[in-house]
Structure formats: structure tokens, C-alpha cells
Image (cartoon, rainbow, N blue to C red):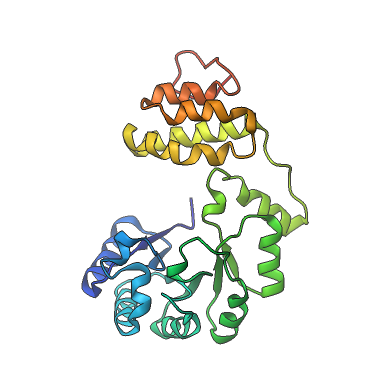
Length: 267
């Protein structure tokens, strides 16, 4: 599947350069993204993520080092600032560092996710840089995408939390942008089939314990707005075994499985 990007974060310029070189050599992504926007304490307390927005000289050294160490495009993802909006200044610094495009999440680090993203900043940032601008933050509906692309004039959009439990949102937005219309929301049966397929893919790459934890984080998103699943959701969240969890999830639409197969789709 292409294109793919790999994101890195850190606060040490030499370590970041080495990480970028290893990633380019061993994994061959199309782009390396530098995380300059994560507001989570376990990241910022190390001086990484959004904490670098407080020290533009250090940020500049890290980004220039990564850009110069690889032969593929490098992007950066930022928030509007740490506790004040200095996004235009940061954007200009990053463009001068040689990044190929910029992703902006329209909140400050101190805001967390507690306030609505401020989309008005995108137009101002766009006027002050020449590299492509990617908008991020509270993009959930197809008309959000068309507004940002057509009215504000960003070059692309990035969807994060809006896709949790709703991976079909990308197809819906693409259809709306291209045709001006999109399909209806999936039925419960369709949602469960997608979720079970996601669980299969998780099983292929991570262990059972982490798969169970991730299922518990996402089940409420998949079943949001379907009140008749409320009791079953509670039972799923208190289950520790993956096979039991899959059985309960499948039981929302069917109690029958394909005999002798690891495929988890209900019949």
C-alpha cells in the first residue's frame, strides 16, 4: 500500500537523524514525518512533540538534521503553539528548514482536545508559506473536507480521531469531494464486519493482550449511536479473553461462525 509515511519524535538532534536514516534504509517509506505536535505528557516531558514549539532554535536544529540525513521528503506536524499561537512563525521556520509539506492541528498544545479546533488559522498560515498545507483537527464529516479544501484553500486534509471506529469515513469523503454525494452510514451488520476484519489484522501484527486493549478502546466508537448494543458493549469491555470478546462482538449480529476457519466474519 502506497504512499506510506513513518512518524518519528524525539528531542535529540543526533538520535533523530540516525532514526531517520535507519527508517529510510530498512523500511523505505515515501515520507518521514516529524512529530512536533503531540501534547501528551509522557512525550512533552522529554522535550519532544509539542514541547519543541517552545524552543524554536532546538526545533530548527532537529528538523534541519533530519531533512539533510535522508533522500526522501520530510514533513512536520505541529499544533498552533504551546500556550500561545505562534503557528505562522513556526511554519516559516519549518519551511526554511526544507520540509516538503506541513501538517497543522488547529489547537494549541495546552488545549488538549478540550476546545473546538480553530480552522480560521489555516487561511493565515497558507498565505505565509509556499509549501503544501495539510489541515487537521475535528474533521469528521464530508462537508468539513470540502469546506477546508474549497473555501479555505488547504492542499489536503488529515483525519485522526474522526476515523476511530469509522474507517469508512475516508471513502465517504472521497466520494463527496469527487461526486458531491456519499453513501449512507453503514448498518450494524456492516460495522461489525469491518470491526472483525480490523481485529484479524491486529492479531497478525500484535499480541493478544494488546489486541484486547485496543478493541476495548474502539468498540464504543464502532457502536456509537446504536442504543440496543449498550448492554452487550459493557459485557465486551469486562472480558479479558480475545476469543470470548470476538464471540460477543459477532453475536451482535449472529451467533454462527465459519466452522474450522480463523476467519471471524459471521455467516
